[in-house]
Length: 202
Image (cartoon, rainbow, N blue to C red):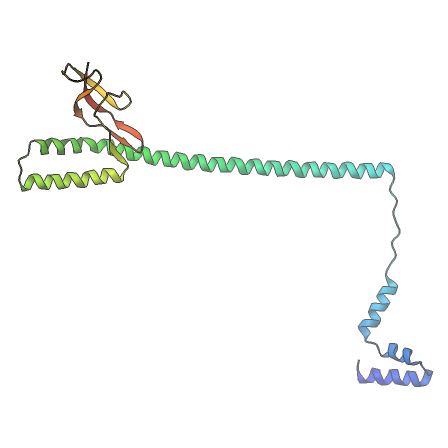
């Protein structure tokens, strides 16, 4: 409160002979006086009474809004589930396509490996042949990094792994035994890219 206002309140107290309580009220800050005035001036609201028809209409409107909200939530959940399935399906298709590309590349390189092995079968034991063996080893390591592995071609014939191109009548061998391998078979990441070509005992 300003000094002028204090002087005025004291002057008023002297002129009107105010009581101590009235003097304190006269010196109260303007904010407190305004708050007290606003409380006194606050409007009073009358209670509203709704008819049964109005209550029923409001309840129906509320039920409809809740139903619309539930439908919107369900639709959002369906869209989210569909998008998640779409994302997983695309990721799987992308992975399968990449693996198929690797298999095709390995399949195209296998004839090169076959020629390396034919050359080594007929090569003399010298430094040149040793160099070819080292190159073949590097080639095999590269195929292994692509997920390629050689198919076993020993023991019994398996139509899921082997391609029987000739029959044999070898003594001492049982029926269905593989007696010779003409071309090695290969699988890449669990799928066969080339069946092993074998001779099978009758």
